[in-house]
Amino acid sequence: MAENIPSVDSLVAEATRVFKEEFNCKPEVAVCAPGRVNLIGEHTDYNDGFVLPMALPLVTVIVGKKISGYESVVITTKKDVDSPNKVVIEMPNKRALISYCKPGKPKWANYVKGVIVNYVGEPPTFQAVIASSVPTGGGLSSSASLEVATYTFLDALNGPNDILPKTKALACQKAENGYVGMPCGIMDQFISVMGKEGNALLIDCRSMVSTLIPLTEPDIVVLITNSNVKHELTGSEYSTRKNQCMEASQLIKKISLRDAAESDIEYLESINANPDLIKRTKHVVTEIQRTLEGSEALKSKDYKKFGELMIESHNSLRDDYEVSCPELDVLVELALEVDGVLGSRMTGGGFGGCTVTLVYKKAVAKVIEYINNNYEGKATFYICKPSNGAQLLQFKQESHYY
Ligand code: GAF
Image (cartoon, rainbow, N blue to C red):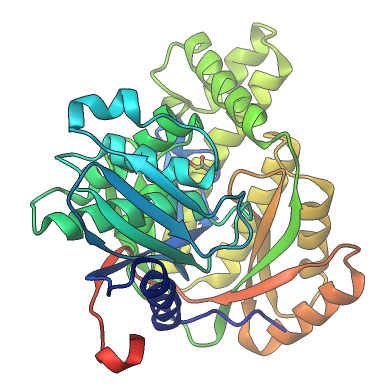
C-alpha cells in the first residue's frame, strides 16, 4: 500500500493546535512549501544545465504570528529530526544578525536561521510552529521545502512585496550553501517556489527560465519509492562530484559542463585525463540531452520514450556519475520487472533516498506488491501528482482549526 499523504489542512490544524498550546494565542498566518521529485536531469543544475522536477503534495507548513522584541521562537512537530524541537533565535537588527544567528544544533533549525540571515529585507521576530509531511533525508527536498516555507512565512508576516520568485529561490539556496554548508544547485528551491499543479517544470539552471510541461494523463502514475537508506557519503561525495565537474570544465576551457559536447569527451580521452573526470563529463553531457528530449517526449505524451530516458539516466548515474547505491539499483531493477512500468530511476542527490517510477495506473498496485515481496529492506511508497509551489494559506472556518 502507498502511504496516505496528509492534507495541507490537517498539517495546518496540527501546527495550530501546538501553537495554541505553546503560546496561548492563535496564529495569524499559515504558509506551505512543497518537497519535490526530479523526473530527469540529475546533477545537472550546478553545471548550468536543465532539470525536470515536479512539486509534491508532501509539504512543510508553518503557522505563526509576528511579535515584538528581539527573540523568535520556533517549534517543529516533526518526529524524525534531531532534538530539541524548540529553539529561540536571537534576532537583533539585520546587520547584527550574522554575528548573533550562527548555525548550530539542532540541525533542522539551521534551515530556518539560514533563511532569516539571507532574507531580502528586514526579517520580523515571530513565534512559529512547523509541521511537515516531507520525509527527512529521503531525497525529496525536505530541507528546501523548509527553507522556502520559512521565506514565505517571513514575507507573509511583513506584508506584500514585489520580490521575484527567482530571487526568493536564490536566497533560500544561499541559506543552504553559505549557512548550512551544503553546496547544492538551484533545482530544489526553484521548484518549491515555482511548482504548478498538473505540471512538471523544465528549468534552465543557467538563465533561470522555466517552462511548464503538463503531466495530467489519468492512466499514468508517478510512484516514489523510498529505500529508507541514507549513506553517510552523501555530503562529501556531492562536493567531490561538483569539484570534478569544475575541474573537467577547466580542462576543456568551458565555463561549465553545460557547454561541453561529445568532442570534449573525446578531447579528455586524448589527453589521458583522470578517468573519473571523463565519466562525470559523459554523464552531464548525456543527461542534459536526455532532459531536453524527455521534456519533448512528455509534451507529446510519448511516455514510452520518457520511460526509456529514465532508465538511461539511472544507468548513467550508476555507472558514470557513481552516485547510486545497491538498494536504489535493486529498487529500479525490481520495478522494471513488472509489466506496465514505463521507466524507473534514482532521484535526487543519490547514495540512498528514493527512486521515481513512471507506471500505468492499472499496474501500480502490482509494482508495490512486487517490491514489498522482493526488496530486502522496508520500502515506503508515495503516489504523487504534480502540485503547487509555495503558498500563503487562508485559515478556513475558524472552528476547523481552533
Ligand atoms: C540535491 C541538490 F540539492 C540539488 O541541487 C541537485 O544537485 C540534486 O541533488 C541532484 O540532481 O538534491
